[in-house]
Image (cartoon, rainbow, N blue to C red; front, side, top):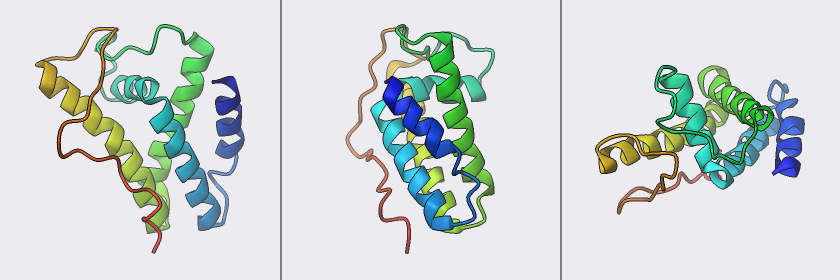
Length: 138
């Protein structure tokens, strides 16, 4: 986990790079991190959109406050790229990644009738697919 977060921190320095190809590669790499640590990013997303609902989508218990903060910074950067990147393909990849996380939250809420407890498991339902990130650049 620490190595992954160190790599992500290095990648975050390239978020404002002038080359859309570099920014695209950064987003693809961060998207893979989101997939690997999905529960942490579910907590980040839910905290941003519902700051008063603490505990509904908690961070995994083994994460300390410093690691949680690092995940939040990564999430903030993905949202920033999603909303402000001038190159459509880069913004699209970030949008697909953010949407993937938000749809997982929605599907979890719909399937459980409410938000799950601290030991929740997130499962795919039939037609939901992980975004095809690599196909976004045309």
